[in-house]
Length: 177
Figure 1 (tube, rainbow, N blue to C red):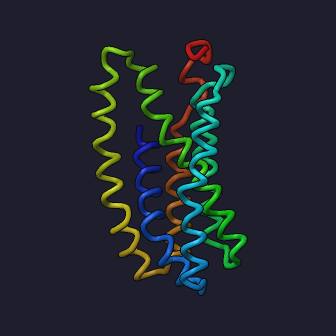
Figure 2 (tube, rainbow, N blue to C red; figure 1 turned 90 degrees about the horizontal axis):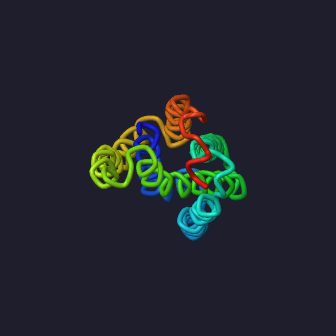
């Protein structure tokens, strides 16, 4: 579940530091607020994709797609300076983040069964909550020293490294039909 903890860290860090990062890039406060607003709304397509899951693809593949979208989104944010490029990066990251948000409790239910799902979701939620608390402060401190472009590239690298832990064959797609 390190994948979900890293995703939580990056999501909270980006959500809370997005407007300052955009102001650092020279966007007006109005443009920064508008692009920042994409973060919430663009999580919906990822969630809808998971809800429409038919069982023909392992949910772990969807988690891998989620991480890929987040990595590409953060890498785009690390390099983009145009409003369109920044908006695309936010949209990609948020879509992947939305997918990851609902995948974890579902996968815990599948792996541990109904009897243990509550307990295990609680165990896995603890590090995610700590990551959500540490992400915004840690990223802001790093950005003060090195700028948001570097920090977003670092987060993209972190998520890419953690994504290597995903194995698409961990879950039999037949369990989800």
